[in-house]
Amino acid sequence: MAEEMRIVLRNYGKIDPFKLDDYLAVGGYDSLKAAREMDRFELIEEVRAANLRGRGGAGFNCGAKWSFAYQTEADQKYVVCNADEGEPGTYKDRLIMEGDPHSLLEGMAICGYAIGANKGYIYCRGEYPQAVNILKQAIAQAEEQGLLEDFSIEVRQGAGAYVCGEETALIESLEGKRGEPRIKPPYPPISGLWGKPTIVNNVETFANIPAILENGAAWFANIGTPFYPGTKIVTLTGDVVNKTFFEVPTDTTIREIIYDFGGGIKDGKEFKAVQIGGTSGAFIPAANLDSIIGFDHLVSIGACLGSGAVFVLDETRDLVDIAVQIAKFFSHESCGKCSPCREGTVRLQDLLDKINNNQGVAADLPLLNKLGKVMSYSCFCGLGQAAPIPMLTTLEHFPADYMAKIG
Amino acid sequence: MSMEYQKILAKYADTPGGMLEAFHAIQEELSFLPEEAIIEASKVFGQPAIEAYGVAGFYSMFSTEPRGENIIRICESAPCHIAGASRVVASLEKELGISMGEITADGKFSLEFTQCVGQCQATPVITINGKPFYDVSPEAIPDILAEFR
Ligand SMILES: Cc1cc2nc3c(=O)[nH]c(=O)nc-3n(C[C@H](O)[C@H](O)[C@H](O)COP(=O)(O)O)c2cc1C
Ligand code: SF4
Ligand code: FES
Image (cartoon, rainbow over all chains, first blue to last red; front, side, top):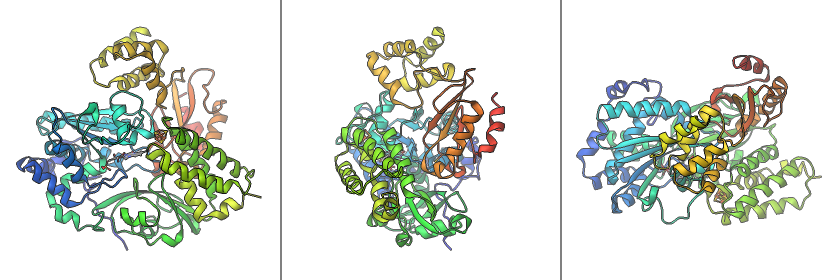
């Protein structure tokens, strides 16, 4: 049976998040001290060698990203933590912030030293007032003891916009504006917050950093699959016995997640489909359950690890009904900046609604496919590009659900 | 009321990009963003009024219309949806005598949809004034509401 391995959740439930002394007692802030003894370039090389890839969805090598900001000369640089966590079915970043806030702060401070930034922001979604409260207290305690030295961290709250999880939209929002994505390039490490070099990393990415420095890059690079080493927090929802979270090495299979950790399908029913990566993720059929969750393995089966959310559906579920609900999410969350997404998400919802209400015709299916394909290559940002994926993958793997509703 | 938001805005005037924080703080006091507050914010942050309106309108947690004293939000994302969120909606509508998107006549409650609030270990989820309630069943609604009546 597959086993849990806790790196980012190493202190979760074991220390009191309100007590800095608890964190210090388990070696907290030692990695920051050690980092400050290192040459910045070597520190970044160490992070790069660990091959830690971003846990926010895009899977970019963390050390490589830091090196761009390090190399860019500027009078001011910023470290931004993406704690917007809006992907439905996901609550991993909340667990870290509420259970072990200092490991996030320590990771950010290490990044600040590495790239030469003295200011950090945590952009936390407005739906997490408890996390904001814990973070603010943790920052005050760390600053009071001088642990962060000249690095200061401020918490800012989002206000209910999924697109603000996209890094350039997040930056716009931090600047006090509407959260509409910017054109890339320039990428944030070159020109980000207020036009300054900015590192945006996910909460889970930062929380890995202290452990990597403590145990060494080679230790980390050898955990899980070599192409996407380390662990991943998985949040399991839907028709499983245990709706819960766990942290597993990245060579764990989807089957192990559902059956070993999730206890299998609820009420003795059969498995039908699983959606990985949150609401923008692909629906995966039973044939692919033995794939491991490592980033590239999922890409090879037409899926994406995304946030690590795993949403399981049993044999009785109607995937058209679920696709409608997801389409509604995207038409609501589209920021409206570009027309393929602003219009496309509404049309997608209309067409799916029509089929779900038994008013669809056979010609609607190729139309859906075409709409989805056009959106996936013409939308301005990842939101619109991913919006048709749930529809496209349910249509590909579960056409019977659609056919049953088309006379 | 006017004093209230002017004081709040003054507090954030020197915070770079502080408009969102200021709007959160105003809503904390007034439950919504009155037009005068938005116009005042544009002056405080040195922006044209259209920018301040743009911000107020962009984010789903900001409201330019008055809202109930207690704001009930129901998660309609897929995990909550399949766990029976629509039955919880029906129960709330019946118990309060209003439909989604409305305010009770006594101004005590607003009913709003939301997307995932990150408490998916215990679907379906509702929040009241930001506080989550877990594994909510239609039958539990009267007891949950009693606390706020
Ligand atoms: C629509 C959209 C939503 C996103 N939401 C999040 C999010 O909630 N949290 C997050 O960390 N990254 C999110 N991302 C990815 C970020 O743009 C960015 O890649 C990430 O913050 C980089 O951090 P990492 O390298 O540590 O993963 C989102 C991307 C898109 C296109
Ligand atoms: S794809 Fe959608 S969310 Fe992204 S910029 Fe275009 S309209 Fe906005
Ligand atoms: S899906 Fe409803 S709280 Fe996450």
